[in-house]
Each structure stands twice: as structure tokens, then as C-alpha cells.
Length: 314
Ligand code: TXA
Ligand code: MG
Image (cartoon, rainbow, N blue to C red; front, side, top):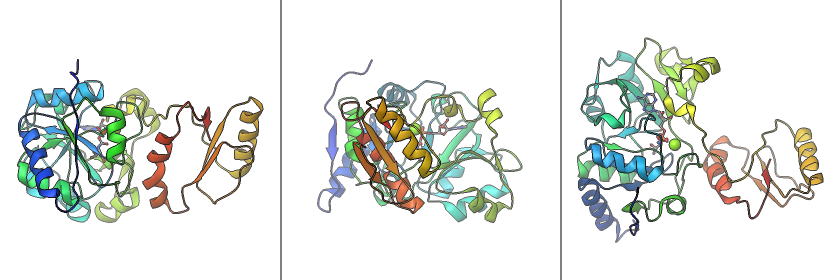
């Protein structure tokens, strides 16, 4: 059980920045859990070498124990300290994309707590690209395990407000670095085989990786269903409070809206193609045509719809 505590909101505007980072560092050294900003989404961080601290993450997030956490470090040298049998293409990937939104799954050498990797012989590690968290990592001098800072199953948090909605009272503090730049999680790449395998898509794409390594594999859905290499794929993710229906073109969209409205449902519409007026919809949001804008806003929009306001999102 998680005892209630007051979650401190650590601001990082110019004059408060140093003191806030210092406070976060001391909490982390004490084995406490602190939410931190990254370029992708907010992470729920704790000392990756401290098993009890890691347990606090699983408890706060209500995360299944068999779903491993990503370890965050500041430099390539530190990254390589926690892995063994690293394939040559990994360094090429690090040089090309890190710091940045990519996580490398590598053979683990046992230097992080067992519950970080959920007992697997591999560890997921990345170098986040965020100036506040870079400073934090350099000062704390510990690898930080951090899953996304949402309650299990919910959309990932892209602001300190989102973190507070899910975790206020359950963690020591949130370090507020403003809204995250990318807005979706890092690309997870299994680098233990001769060909890198994308386990979770993200901002670093298949073609980005091919440009560096010359080859890449994707997990087929059959593999995902039978024996997921990435245990996280077993669980529901990013679920908003109300059902979400995905449609592939405008005609299908209008048909679906009409059908839902005939059932007297209040409908929210999220558009990615162009801004339009959708008759009878309770709310309409246009994410922008650019995928970068769509990624940046997606989770915020999904979180904004509660069952009090709408019955379905299309
Ligand atoms: O952008 C991100 O990656 C964010 C920020 C906070 O860094 N973190 C994040 O963590 O999305 P999380 O725990 O929500 O997702 C981690 C994913 C899960 O699907 C997990 O199963 C997978 O990475 N993963 C972690 N370690 C793994 C390993 N050793 N082998 C396979 N998959 C692993
Ligand atoms: Mg997550």
C-alpha cells in the first residue's frame, strides 16, 4: 500500500531551478520517487540500484511486477556501464540518436536492481534529451529507472499537471520542466540480435534506424500475441476514460459520428487531416497536419475527455 504524502511541485523557472534540482537529487538519493521531465513524456524516477526504491515506483503506478522499467543515464559511457556483449551497431545508434527518444534493450550485466528488469537478462536504457533532467542525472550520479509517470493503463503524462492528476499524494515530488517536446514515448529497440528489432514505435523511425544500421526488423503481431519480447505489450495502454473509435477516412468518420449521435451519445472528434466543422459533435479538436504536432498534443487531448463530458471519442 502507498501511504499518502504531500507531493511537492518543484518549479524550474530561472531563480528556482537550482534549488528544485537539488531537492530532487536529495529525494532520489533517499530512495524516494520523483517525476521528471524528458523530451518524450514525464518519467517516474527512482534509484535503479536500490530495489526498495524501485518497489516504490511499482506501487505508486500500480504497475504489474513483470513489466520492466527503462533506465535513464546522462552519457554514452554510463549507458555502456550497465550492459554486456554490446553489438557494434549499438554505438553507431547511440552516436546518431542519443541523447534522444530511443531506448536500447541490451544484455544486462547485473549492475541494476533485479526488479528494474523484472528478472529479464536484458535491460532497456536511454539518454533523455532534456536540459533539466540532464543536470539532474549529472548531479545525482545514479542511473534512474523511470517508467512513464501515469497510473498503469492511462495515457502518458506530457505535463506536470498530468502527473499530479494521476499521482498526487503517492510520490515525493514532480520536477516541472514544462510540456514535453515530443509527446509520445521513446522508440524501444531490441539490440541483442544481429538485426535490431523495433519493439515499440516512437519518434525515431524504422527508416531512421535503417539509415544507420542498414537493416531493422519489426515485431510481427503474432509474436506480440504469443510471446511478447517487450512485456509491456501485454497490457492495455493509453486508455482514455471513455471508449475511442479509430476511423481511417472522413466518410467513415461522418458515418460513425452519425451512428453514435443516433444512440444519443455525446461525441468528441479528434481530427488529423484538416480542420472541419462536425455537426452535432460535443467537441472537435484538430491536432494539426504535421505528425510532430499530432504527437505533441495527442495524450493531452485524450486526457482532457472525461466521462462527465463525453461518451465516446472518434
Ligand atoms: O519515452 C520513454 O520511453 C518514457 C520516458 C519516461 O523515458 N518511458 C516509458 O517507460 O515509456 P514505460 O515503462 O512506460 O515503457 C517501457 C517499455 C515497456 O513496454 C517495457 O515492457 C519495455 O519498454 N521494456 C523495458 N525494458 C525492457 C527489456 N529489458 N526488454 C524488453 N522490453 C523492455
Ligand atoms: Mg508507459
